[in-house]
View 1: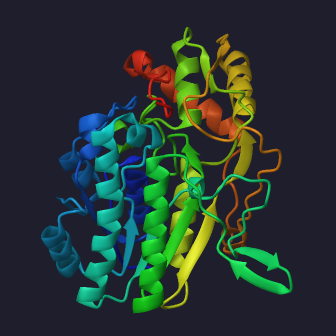
View 2: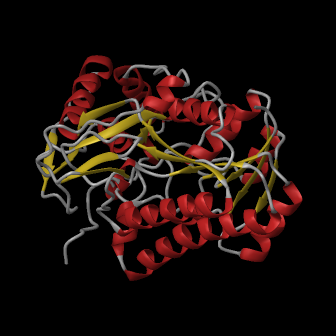
Length: 378
């Protein structure tokens, strides 16, 4: 499928990288964003102005907040896209737990935005494929494999296949669960066509288009405790040469991860292979599952072997309330595998690339913001 794609949240970490890739593969792209991240988050990589970004890609863009119903509705009417990639969320769990205002801001953005989306599609009678980024963190942590097809339950003589249980570990995760429920309901009631992507933790900064040499094309790269993802933060800590690698709790927590370049590859695959009309398609999106402590040890080893940087690991009391006793954490990803997804780079290669970029922009690393300060417990 080629055509016009509206990216809501185009100025973010994934959004701008995706826009570049879609343009390179022949899609027409129109983007909207409220530019919230430019106000609250730092970036290790230089970030070009919105005007320069738009000019570099020759795409359409306007500032729009998806919670602004009249404006968002008008954008959809005017742009009339063939597909929508919805990334317009507040994506940070720690930010949602920081204080009341941040929690309310997260809840408003992450629930009103998706509601505005489905009601706008209904009102405008738009027959488009919508891809929404969810999170693997929506699922309840357990030793039971996470299947896209649901969970077969037996109770006495009765058997039923039910959706895999959801249980968030932050207010952010709970808003994402609610968003998924909204999307599935809209598909069932109104015949909308939605792909809900349960994505793992994204790391790295390079893609096919972002080679690290042209600063105009860099996407956002945050590493602070509020807005940075785990592996990106480890790479930034290693690049400082004197900040220890942060491990929360025992480090036995397991998570699904994938490089930014593979996140983009998967999203394009899903765009090019939409579900059946009126279907709610749930997709698990990750490269592999890793223990957090193992990732820290891998960063420590690569820092020494490739860059001669000796780093220490420091274990902090876990600021989050989460299970650390899951021995088997398995996530099935049958849909993407069937569409031809193949990891494009190894974990070690991407860690090396990421540390290299962090070293290049070492002076921009927010050292004082790397360590955990936001705590889940009262």
